[in-house]
Length: 114
Image (tube, rainbow, N blue to C red; front, side):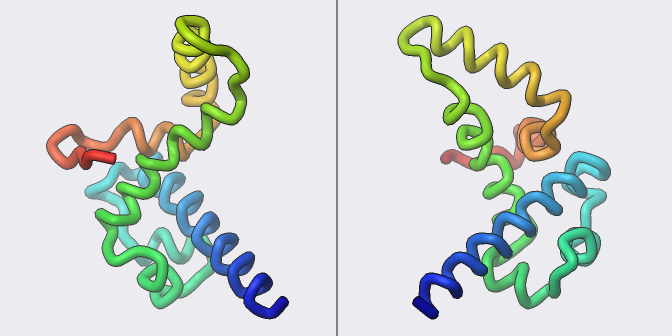
């Protein structure tokens, strides 16, 4: 039971860091975002950030790679309709979700294969 609680807390902490990073990247861009501003936004320590992510780039990659989880669970369609639905959901969520905006603003020169 203790391990489950530790794992749940670790997942919550990681998600808290991801959300804060997405907000800071969205507001300031990758180059303008500092890890200190990210942990301040998350209300955590640098140690917590570096426990989960080895660098600012690794954190940005995790933000970018989280995009499918923000869209795909909302869809129930298949085939060509699924592609249409992904486009519509993404267009709407870009307006309200900093995780998607931050991930889609990642400079192509830094793009990383998933």
